[in-house]
Structure formats: structure tokens, C-alpha cells
Image (tube, rainbow, N blue to C red; front, side, top):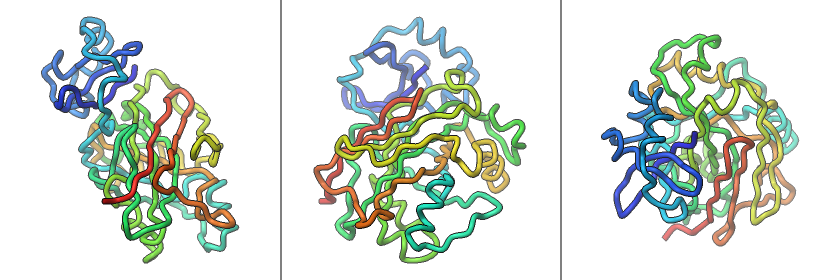
Length: 286
């Protein structure tokens, strides 16, 4: 099932994709947000709830919101694909493989939705793409064992963890380059975990103006999804609606010779097998 957050008639809501329509499940259930639905016992009843709900609008007529618009935590993995790690070394950046997953946090205001613009800030000319698989947490947990981690996954989505490279390289930590507003594309929806077998290898492709710039698969991850969940949950309690962004493969713009970056007027798409395609135009900050 595909669940999404969207705006209809000027009101923020959430629901499910049924063919080329959406059903408004906030109206059907009285549960205000998708994250709260994931946390509720009614999440297990989603098939019957959707079957009884009437279509609210055509999918083409709604305004998408980030899948989880106000996630408590957006935990992002750094250099979590071996092919990307190798291109980082080839580009001259000295980075050793770590024994534990390097992570950073994004704020919810740094996100933008499917079909909404990723904004290049006026302080940068090096806005880079990073296509990534996103995991949405479905069950609260602290110190989750890797063997139980799949039980805490509600579903999967797509992230473009776009990087403002000048600011990322201000220091050894990269948070400043990852939290400019409207730089993290997130969508278009969440595919529930029952649709994708745990650990299934998924093809990932990023396209800039139709040209393939990243082509890889999730089998190249250095730290698996269970490892990322276990590690993050050791630090803080993971709650329903938290997002784990699992890292990007090779093919980012800054490692190219010469470097290549997104600019206003471009369109960046990230497609992940069995999930869908996230599409974001690029615009300049006003």
C-alpha cells in the first residue's frame, strides 16, 4: 500500500493511493497525521479502512507534502555505500571506513515534497544530488537488536539528500551543508513494509534532466538497515514516523571532473525499484 501526506483544498491531510486517486484517511479515521496513524493499532487494519473509504480526489490534483512532514527525527547515514566511499577516496578526500555508522540529523524544515522545488540557497553554487532509500519507523524502540529491527519498519520511501557542498566542507562535521531549508526531497509516498521483503536488493537511479547520474542498488550498503536502526536506537528512542535515510551510492556531482551541480531550472528525479520516483525541480532562493 502507498500512504502519503498531501494538501487538498488548502488543508493538510494524509491518505492512500488507490489507482489514480487518493482517499482521505484523516477524514475516514479521525487520526490527524500519517505518523500518528502508523503509531496506532489501526495501522494493522489499513487494508479494510482503505477499502471502505471513498476517493477524495485525483492524485494529479493534490499537492504533495513530505511523507512525514514533521518527523521528530530524520537520521541520515554518511558514506554508506562502498561505491560512494571509493569515489570519495578517488576524489582526494581521505576518509577511512568506520567501525560504526557515521550519522547526522536533518530538521523537518529542511525537507520538501515530491514535485516541489529543491531550493539552491543564495550562498551556494554547489547544490549536489544524493538519491537515497528512506526507511520509516513503525514501532517505538530503544536499544533495538539487529535481529528485531525489521519489526520496527513501517515502510519505505525516497529521499534526495541534497547537499550544499561549500557549507558541508566548512568543518569535518557536515550538518550545516545538510539543513538548508527545502533541500531534502522526500516522497512521493511510503510503500508499506509488507510490499517489500526485508533485505531485498533494490535498484536506485538518479537522473538530472533525464540523464542518469547515479545507478546502483541497495546491496552496496556498508551498514545494513538493521544495523542503522540498532545503532540509532542505542542513542535515542526511535518513534513511529522517524525517518532513517540510508546513504547514497556513487555518482554525486562534486566528485566528477569537472564537478557538476544542480542549478535553477534543472529537474532531478530519484527512482527506486518497488517504491516509485521522486521528482523535484530546482529553484533559486528568493
